Image (cartoon, rainbow, N blue to C red; front, side, top):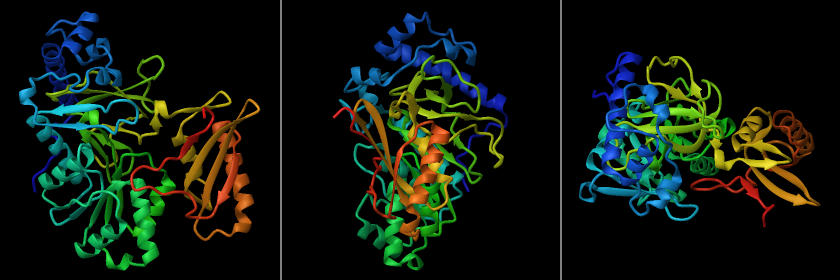
Length: 428
């Protein structure tokens, strides 16, 4: 079977690939983009001056503002006639982030995505039901092109429509489901409600686009009786989803370091942090033609995983995404990331996977209301005890004491895309 894994046999060989790619990328951006040329000149860069990977530290950062200011074709480094496609982010604030692609960019992205399916141990006999957004979003195109390049059967179902999704699972005998974690939970609960698990042949799930807790993963896995689940990262700026994957060892996410360099920096000082320390992910592409990225600040928070993965693959790893630096909220002078709440709740017995934080202000004081679903089958008489457990656990680990309400399983809203869990009413 064709492999999509890289051919390097040592980290020295990988670093040689990265250095060649870094030299090409910076010179390409300098010659092709006025914005990049100005940014690079401002730090004293001249073409050909990259001599080692350490020189990366002297290069300027790129941010989402650079993409917004260059709308509709930001940071474009090739003639528009060489562009064969564009994709855009969801654009939750202001204009959408629009990214252009050459044919080589599409081919590289497709190869990376096929590598994801290979790392998830799929075969060409698998039937992959793709329940993510199509259109201008990167998700649908990426999952489908990668599946077809890999050689498995793609079922381009799109998001939502549980009736159709379950019909497809049964009729087409899909073995792999690709979706957001929220969509996975929604579908799993519907399969359970209809009592049709014995009629479907799902074995694996590839999920991404949002942070998910261990409790949520465990619930999905149990309801669908899955053999394995794989977290997939990705963002529009960096091709789209498919730029890495959690392997079967489930000890971090392998990222495709032959296509981009990952730095983890302190979001405030922008200095590198040590392996294992949480920081902001910064990416530099190595072969991206239309819109190369030079030290692009993703705002995603993670940590580098040291050493070689137990699975034996030499590709480096980062931890799961904790959240985004701009997702952080402050309660009584304490910085809190949603991933910290996920982590606390996932370790508590009798607690379900879903929660909702409502932030309010009363008499000048911040109030953190935490609504948490009970585990399925937990008696309501146990709710007060579980509320006290959650309150003390959050206080001990996050240093803020919330008002806690335990609600019956299934009470909190589900979503076919991403579930909104933090509601800040303090500015309303």
